[in-house]
Image (cartoon, rainbow, N blue to C red):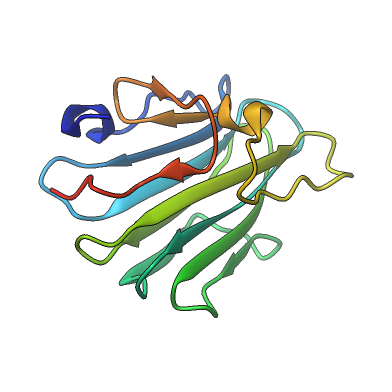
Length: 150
């Protein structure tokens, strides 16, 4: 994936599109991950960002008290978001320069059975993930975030 593929906010419409977008803004070293509800009552997104070195920054964006952002392991961000209707939950994160890192994702739309992401090929979850303003589609997870430094 080229540099242009990850630049610029993904174009999810919170009330229409269910899924997760990940991108970097032009000139920034901070990744942005946003989960959108797509107008459904409950969407459940779980996943992790794992790096070979301690992660520099991990900040929750628009999280509610039932959302989980776990940064107890300095090399990993674990998240568990419940996104309803037109709302959005997210994370802003910065990886160490040159560090190998991956994003794994799971989703459960029933609100009852959690699908936890791990390092297996979770094709259904991959289809919920889009990268950058060009809406680059992900074929398999985990997504390698390495080598995309600005």
